Image (cartoon, rainbow, N blue to C red; front, side, top):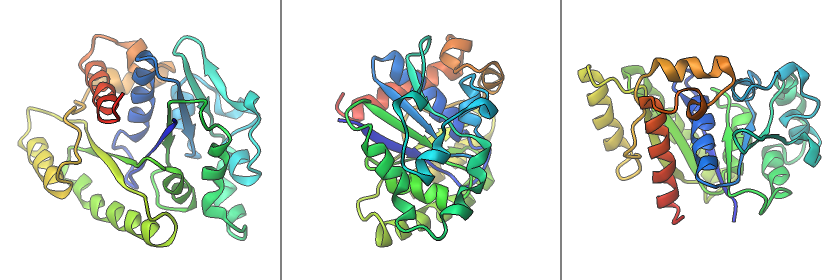
Length: 256
């Protein structure tokens, strides 16, 4: 059975794409068949895996507009044993093009149906906004939403917005949508603020916060520029240890 999780936070710079790439890479290292779906027009997940976004022939743009994604459009990274449905700059126009389309909120969900059983995990990386692309990501999240939250004060302000968006999707499009878990990122043990944010987030999402906390890390910030996840770029770094721990925690919680 394929588990589909969507990573979402309308605030940029919280470690959403970093988490999608590195969680996916460690799940693959733990013998899971993983597909990463990039629905962010900035295509950061795509380039973070060493794929040139302007050279992509078929992308999530095609998935949303036509629903037709040939198997050849899934890029398989032999080294990482990881699959990617890439994004491309064309995706920036998709929200406008989809506005008049019937069932526009269900396009991604319907496309992913065709991959049923091929993967153990599908991780959807959303743009840092709450538009139609993100709505597609949320409606497709049949097993829940993963919310990365940066351990800084302003990050807390966005949590209410995310909660409201999830509630709106539940009431109008996908009643079974749930929060699978909150992932704390960019934690700095030297500051009281980070510790305070951890407490606040746990109060806001009781019992839904992963115990594995991702620290602030130069290595994590550097890895995307080399087109590599942290598991390949700096496997002994604290960031790598955190994402390996997160992958194991997710698997355990999923009964795997």
